[in-house]
Image 1 (cartoon, rainbow, N blue to C red):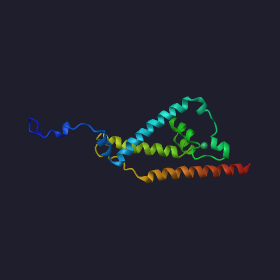
Image 2 (tube, rainbow, N blue to C red):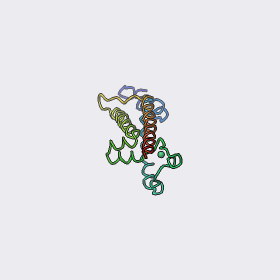
Image 3 (cartoon, rainbow, N blue to C red):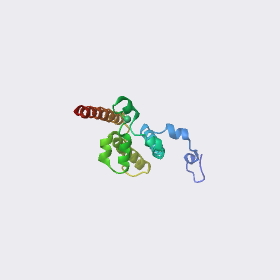
Image 4 (tube, protein in one colour):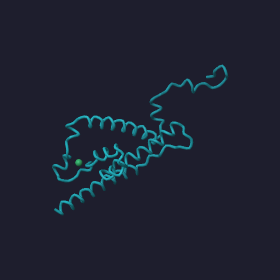
Length: 157
Ligand SMILES: [Zn+2]
């Protein structure tokens, strides 16, 4: 179709299609939107958690009460609290998985956001499964080391 000035005008007429937008997107960009969604859900969940006294005031974790061992998530809440009050090292000691996720999230989402905003020279980070494996590795190492430390400390008494 031609407009009066003789230029091809078809691309202006094309309506926005959610389906095309969603399926035409690269995997890296999909992960960006997913990351944004997860962050919003996490912030909402955290806000709810902090405002329900019986939930946030539960004290020791159920897994630890029953087994006497730390669960893989033990220290996570304190790590998020420490991070929110700007204590990066404290957060890392409580649960290194938390600052790892936050740093990866900031770098990944930040790079994609800058690319979407057409900041010259910035390309959105590629998503690699290795990032997830590193995260799981940190989670497992943290869990094992904390329980060994618990064992050692208990053995000293
Ligand atoms: Zn726990």
